[in-house]
Length: 375
Image (cartoon, rainbow, N blue to C red; front, top):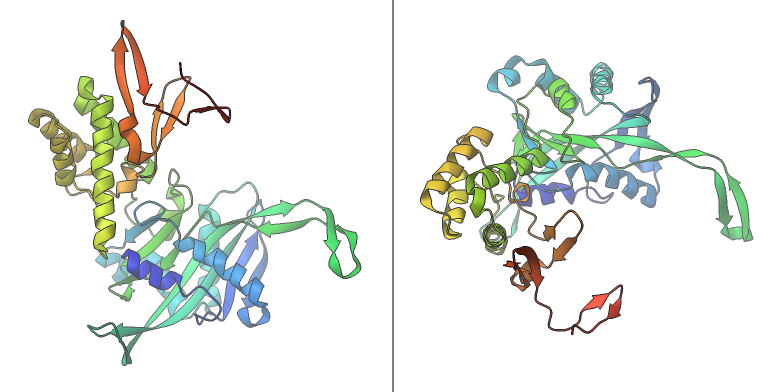
């Protein structure tokens, strides 16, 4: 899926923009026992309640492609006769009305996740009339296709302590018994994927809240596909590749230059308004290193390490390489946060045999919120 396609689906998660009739699911306690089944009609919700429910489901489509949102692909054989893909198709084709399929799915999810508290499994089915557009951007009313899909999310249910609440109609405080509150999704997915603005049953868009934990057991049990590398692991491996390649040349100026070059690539891609997300290949990263002045031998060495860690044809999202909105210099005792647009204000130097981080500061220097003079 592209960023544009993702935004198109996300816009549907408002009460006046979708055909979601109800939220299905179940509530599971900490002993992994289903406490109750859920079938909440959207028509019975107030506008505020409905938008909050849809907001929870929409979070399953939040984050960035390649980091929080991972594209998982089924093989052709799995689509033909795989139990995992068939169960997902049964859920979609029945519009979440096949109770046997729902029960089987609930149990697979329960067996695949681990929470210390209670949690909820929620599903929403939607039918989207996908209109096509002419070259001049006008909607073609007679050229719609139908995209049937469902979104699933797994949310922790956290206890809400008892206390007092203010009752406006009689201006008094009253006791509020302990309740539970639905938390944001920890993981979830959309099936099928919306590729080329049409259904792709060979792919699902998978969501993880924590990029360091992609919930491998869930992916294996629900989809049985090749496990993707967690974004946090991609970051760690890239840093190791770069450090082992540069060795003594892994200095401040080189690392700053790599950050700057990738940030520029991200900005140029954004300004070009490309539909496909930016991906960094081995070839592109080698070009970055060459531009940063790394000698050719080390550039080739980096390429070999990249292949060993990620594969010959790997494509990494920029966010797995650098955080373009953050530039940080840290020692065991001091951390310096720098505006990425002003990294030129920072340098390193050895003075009388002692290593220093230098910050150019002409004016506007504060210590604990107080303006100071540098003498």
